[in-house]
Image 1 (spheres, rainbow, N blue to C red):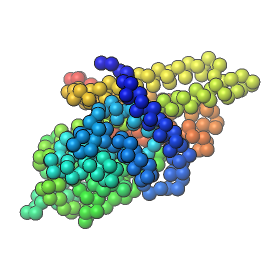
Image 2 (image 1 turned 135 degrees about the vertical axis):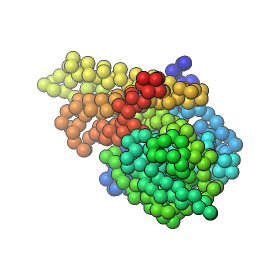
Image 3 (image 1 turned 45 degrees about the vertical axis):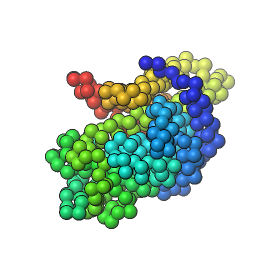
Image 4 (image 1 turned 60 degrees about the horizontal axis):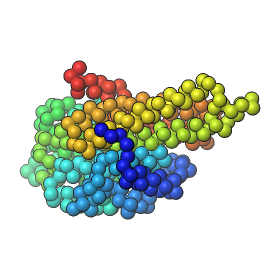
Length: 380
């Protein structure tokens, strides 16, 4: 497996980096946070990303996509991570769009994928529940069958980009017991449906998450994604894809934090001496670099596995997320400490990377969860 970018991917990387540098400074991120923006991102900037084709990278040409691969999408996500860009590309493409593309009917794909790729429709996955603790199959939300369809009852938490979404994919239990992989059905629900309420919440990195309550929400047979009772495997695959994509974003964030710290070490003086010449700080910076490169290898391998439709995607996703969770938190902590007192102030931008590291660490499962999952997948 070649863990290097192609020439075309390097050009895409350069384009994405220039776009982020021009359009999304950390000052913009600070303004979105301080203004308590209800969405936490810009519709206009998201539309520009759609025009560049980024939302269609992994989708087939028949629906307006580019028919490229997850490794190409990785390049873009990494650059968005470098700039801590909050626009909902990961949610729309990997949680919403790819679930529709792989589980939806021909009619659903035809109706939903073109506007999603054009940035006109936002679909995300509402899978986490109050007592689920990273387990995607812990689904207490119930779907009771009625003569005219289904009635959904339950609560979803930490729904990524749920505020402002047009559709939600709701895993609900139609059979079996809580935590069983079987008996889960995926429903595509309009966010304006009667009985559905969305409460915008803020994580410490100011990203958009939502608390979703379903109180007798009606769904028809045409709202079902895939087959009834058979949504467990599709749900697991969607979360694995999104986990791998999040790792690309985390890789970009830790790389930017490392570069910012190295620049500070080269310019900050104490007692007339550059602090970058201190041996102890050199060792710590070297550790940060090693962890970043190990994470890079794991992230690239996981994306290659997705592109190859490998049966080992769950193992690679667990490996990448465990490495990235540990590495990003380590680098965030070290970056703040190496900046000294100024790193502890809100006025300095380095703190944004530590906050992002802390929230990304626990999204889709923390390092301990994924190490345990990796062991279980290998029979331990």
